[in-house]
Length: 96
Image 1: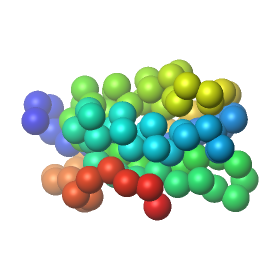
Image 2: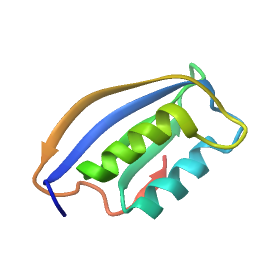
Image 3: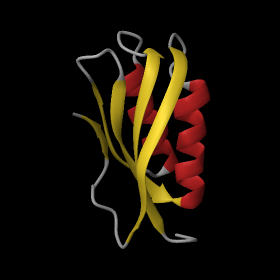
């Protein structure tokens, strides 16, 4: 993988629960070759971790911020704890 590996936490705000956002995130991240997880929160957001190379992370940042599932409405997406990692910490991308 070019440019090393990265991990980033995310939280997506808007209408992101009850619109298949988690499953679409799993499908999109898996298709990109990313690993990590996604889950609903009690405050109506979706959060998780995505790991991959720089191009994969950039793709997912854009997708999480601007695309989402077909019936979602994304108001904003916060990214935190972005860091280089020596190896992937997950085997696949899943719903928690």
